[in-house]
Amino acid sequence: MKLLLTSEGLTTGKIRRAFLSLLSKPVQKNKVLIVHTAKLRKHFGYVRSIKKTLLRLGIRKENILDVNITKKVNAKNYTGFDIFYSCGGNTFYILDRLRKTGFDKFIKKFVKNNKLYVGVSAGSYIICPTIEAATWKHADNNIIGLKELTALNLVPFIVTAHYAAKFKKIIDEAEANTTYKVKRLTNRQALIISNGKVRKIT
Image (tube, rainbow, N blue to C red; front, side, top):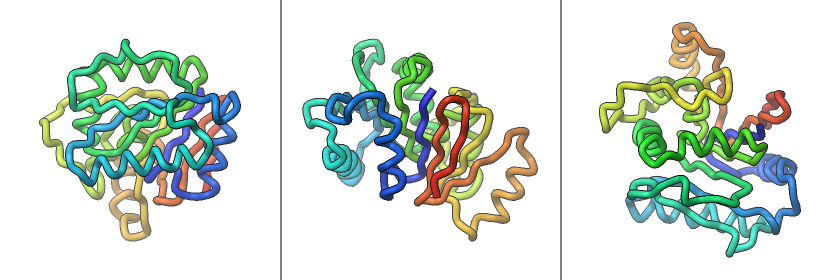
C-alpha cells in the first residue's frame, strides 16, 4: 500500500519529491486518474492547476484523465491507472459520491495492488476509519445529511488537514474524545504510508 496524504496536494518541493519517490515506474510512463467534484469555475481552475503540476513533474498530458463524480459514472469503466489523485471538497458529499459510483471499492482494490493514492484534504479524510474530523474545526457542512460516517478504513488513524496553531485547543479536545489516534497536517505537510510504515514530511 502506497499513500501520500496531504492538505493541499503537491505544494512543496519535499512533497513533490516524495511523490516521485513513490512511483514504481519512470514518471513519464505513469497514468493518473484525478477524481473530483468540481461544480464552480474556481473548482475547475483547481483541477487545471493539478494537471499543470503533474505535467511539470513529467507526467504526459495524454496520461492524465480527470473524472467528475458529481455525474453518473461507474468506477468499473476506469482501468489501467498507476496513480489515483483524490481532490478535496465537501467530505460528506465526496464520501457519498464515492459509494454511489463504486469508487470506494475501486480505491481499496487500487491500493491493495500497491498503486499510489494521493489524497488532498477530504481526499485524505476518506482514507481514515471515519470522516469525523470533517466536523472538528472548519467543519464541513453535512449538506446531504450523511449519517454513516464510516470511511475506507485503510489507515488506523484520523487525519486532520489544514492544521494550524489556532486550532490546537479544538483538535486537542476532539482527540480526547475519539477512539483513534490523530495525525495533524498543516498545509505544507504530508504523510507517506508505504510498506507498513508511516512517515511525516515537514
